[in-house]
Image (cartoon, rainbow, N blue to C red; front, side):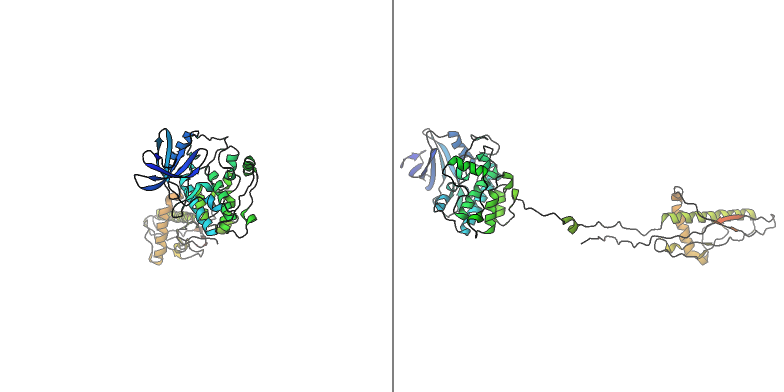
Length: 438
């Protein structure tokens, strides 16, 4: 009663509220000289549940959650010392049955959502969220109180699945069905509160508590626009989404509510639905074509090397048959200019002259062409040994008879080949270029 001192420190002044399980008193902290709220447990109440509430709130620290200052036992009676919130409850503001101003509803909803986000991030589910448990401090800031049936993480509680517990007007469908309650259950209760702040009415009304529980479990809720057409679109969307029957169809938790109230997407799980039809065609990026290096074709060079090799064999035969006498050079071979390989299909018929020696030095009449041919043939000789070459048409040209006094005239023939080389004329792609199809 008034005037009693709890734990030699907290003097009770007047009752703030009383229920079947507990009573809340306005008190004065004699040691710190401040006003506090002292919650005492009724003799027949559940002490374990009372202790759970103290532990649950003590694990939280948020400007929109009522703080616990102390907890203990006085003369065999447990007590809890809470932050004093002197500006009443949200139930007091909604008692007239009228909607709150939109700005006020937006602010209160954002503060409740922030408190839920903090609790959910720490594994705490309130499970009895209602306007009577939303109190206002001296500055008018909304704070959630009364975590009496809260569930902390995966710890066991007195209200396991199969037990209906909570206030009938704000109970979630899964709680009404006796299933376990998670963060989406608090989201549903938040949706009922927001619906009432926007419309001044509850989504389901009945004088029978069990019928009211059944309606929350089975009946589709009305839309906010059914009761009020000028509601801010975002607030109405959040309320409607939060009242979905299936937990997975609601915003996932308090953090999703905070984002939605700030103008973010409102959808199942708090994730915006993104249309994907036609996206691939609109954003497809064609990978860059492989860079083509300007290099000489392999097969034509192999054939060129074989031609040059054949010419060398013919020259060797001529020298062998002529002894020490100078031999008449064989006819010039018409070969394509190396300068055109890999860049165009234009053929060059510039003659390539050879001298009757075993050196590869070119004559002055075709110095650049012969040097290029010799170098190319030398670098591709090893690759020619493993290539399968097509049969090429050949023409036979007689060599002039050698003039010598040591040996009788002898006529020999060698095979020469005329090859027309063509290269791919497809334009090359510059290094680093990326082609994007709009």
